[in-house]
Image (cartoon, rainbow, N blue to C red; front, top):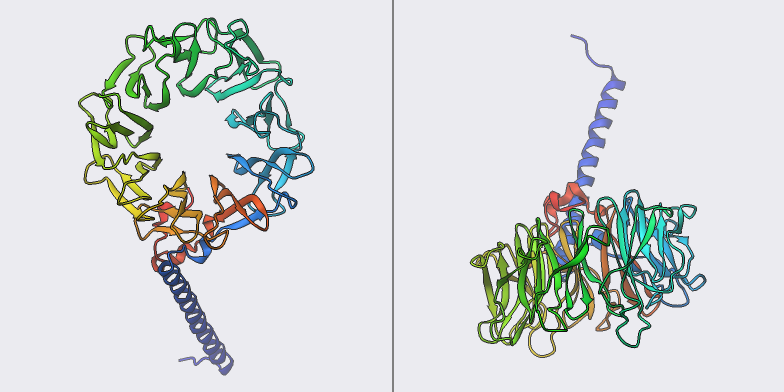
Length: 491
C-alpha cells in the first residue's frame, strides 16, 4: 500500500479547511439575507434588492418629467426635458451612463410632450403632437416620418401591415364640417405615408378616440353628422372607413362608445347611457349585451379582459354597484361582488390572468382587490386606509408578473408599491419623498429585467426611477419572504 507523502497530506488538509470556510460563508450570507427580508417585511417594506433607485437626474434645474415609457428592442425609450433641448427622445438601460438623449427634437402638441409611442416592424414610431417620428434606437436612425402638420394628430395605432393616424382641426370655434377628420396610413416609410383625405360626414374639432384593433381592422369612436359620436371601423381605405351602427338614432349627441375592449375576436364597449354592448364589426352583429344600469342612474366605469373573461366595473342605484364578469352572453354577464355606498370598482388591470382593481367604500376607503372570475375568488388583498379621507391606489400596471402601483397608506403619502396578489406580498417599495409628502410615481414600465417609472422628490424634481428585478438572488429564494416563486421573476 502506497502512503501519500506529507506535502499531499498538507494539501488535502488545506482544501478541506477552505471548503468548510466557504460553506460557513454561504450559510452566513443566506442567513443575513433571510434576516434582512424578515426585518423588511415586518416594516411593510420590500427587501433590499428590490429597492428603487433614481436612474439619472436628467434635468438638474427642474423636472425632466419622463413620459410615455416604452420598451423597444430591450431598451427603455421615453420623452423627457433636459433643460437644454426641451422635450426629446431618450433611452435608458437603467444606468446613468446608459441613459442618453437620442434626439433633442422639441415636441409639439398640447402638453409639449410626445403623445404616444408604438412599435411597427423594426422601428419605434411616436407622435409629437403635429408630426410623426420614427427611430431605430440610434440618433442617426431617428427622423421625421411626416412634415410638421398644421393640424393636430390623433390616435396613432399599428396593425399588421400599416400605421394609421388621424388629424383634426382643434382651432375650430364650432363644428368644422368642411375641414373634418383626416385619415393617414403608412407602411412605415416616408414615401409610403399617405394622407387619404377627409372621412365623409365626420366633423373636426372632435377627436377619433378609443382606437383598438382586431386583426387588421381598427375600431374607434368619432363624431358624425346627425348621428353624434358612434362606433366606426376602418380597413385602411376611405371606402372601408364607415360607421358600424347608429346605436342611438335620432339623438344628435350619439351613444358615445367608450372603453373599447377586445376579447378574442369580439369588441365590447360601454355606450348609450352606460350600457354594455358587443360587436363583431357588422351592424346586425352590434348588439346590446346587458342592462347594467336599468334605471339610468348609475354608470359603467371600466372594462378589462383578464383570462378568458371580460370584467366590468359599475352598476345602478337600484341593483347596486360592483364588479361584473361576462363570458360574452347576456346570461353569462353577472355581478360577482356588490359594494355599498356607491363603491364602484376602478383601475381594472389584468396581471397574468388575475384581475386587480380598487374600490372605495365606507368601511374600506382604499381597498385593493383581485378576482379570478368567481365569487369565492373575488377578494380584498389589502385595505390601505380606514376612516375618513381614504384614497384609491393609482397607476396600476402589470410588470413582470406582478402589480406595481401608487398608494397612500396614511403615513408615507403616495409612493410605489408592489403586489403578488397576497396581503403579505403587497409591499411598499420605498418612501422616495420621506414622510407624508408624496413622490406620486407614475407610468410603470418593464424593460430588460428592470421596472421603470417617474417619481418626484424635493431635491431632484420629477425624474426617471428604476427597480432591478434581476437583483433578487435566485439561490436565496426559499429563504426570502414574499418575493413570489421563480416563475414570477424576469419574463
